[in-house]
Length: 496
Image 1 (cartoon, rainbow, N blue to C red):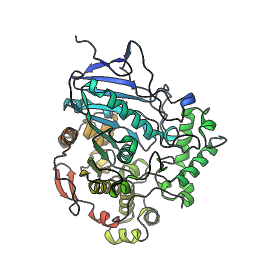
Image 2: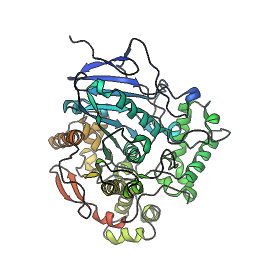
Image 3: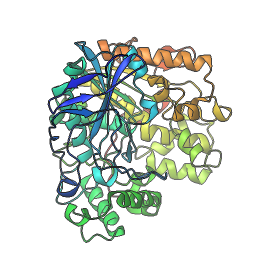
Image 4: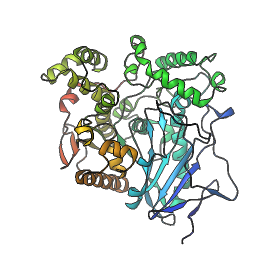
């Protein structure tokens, strides 16, 4: 029986596990626990240790703000996990995955992110935990903004210092994420403090979820008032239990619609505390920064699902119930001004209320931010590979369609994970297995070479890989929506 794998990091020796032909190291701290005096502060460098640290258990997740029952764990939230084909190798490509959802959760321990399939393809896989919700994004007077992004940068710095000891090449790091993780990736593309920390990027379902300081200040003040703190400051919140604060944010997010008159589009996202365009940590949103060449382009694999909003409408119980009043409200609030609502009705003349609601929500929240990131990255001198997931998930008679997050278990090859079985079914079809293999191969090729395997985005062509039972490279399938949004980059949410 082989000895458990050991690696010496800059902080000390870690001992992991040997499993499924690769080595796994879990719960390695990349920064100190952000509690006590360090709560709401920028991440502090991790402590060193003597002897060998056991790295066989996942680190505790940061407090999450979702309507699920999760028991509080420890406070060592800022940890990461490494899966490697061989710690004794050299020069292997690296994927750093940011498993953030809605800026409300970051659970690198989710079985959906099991690295086995990708390490089997020769990739070193790093998954990270970071602060989310109030801990990561409340806009406080006496604390740095966007602390969740600062955590991600600290993790990428750890990778630069240490990944060679796990067989990885610090010069071939790809950073990736889906949904808010993809929004994090988009932000990292434009942040000066992230420059040089990665070479390539993968962004699935990029949200345009950023806030102005004016709106963030008002939202945070309302939340702080709800929890009974004296002021929107770290000092006032520091003694409130982190998990209680997270639970209060869950309730606060559920009531956002009551603030539609003053907080506008933000109230449709379910995420009150999101990244802030603060001018320092995040100088501006990614789209204008890249389009104007104030940020440099990179090799980018970016795309979205065809039916992004379907998952949310089904899970919320609203699928099949949307009325003309709902369609009117959605178009007026989310379509680009001044005539986007009219443009949607003209572009989709046969669409009923359900189709119009789904189209404008899918476009505003994910599809257009993703497509425009491909455009902006190419304008900045980068190479963008655009895709759309079109394969219909079999469960529930197919009503989920090609929905948000369906691409995750496919790409990681974790069809038997809880999310995988929810979205794909208990017994994956041969088509699901084949598409999963195709997406894994696409990721591995891109992470290794920077080439996704189909023609890159070029102005005026908008070539897109449609991922389906028979994948094809076609002109952008959502051309009607692209035309409606032409000239309208995702703008930060602001006060109405």
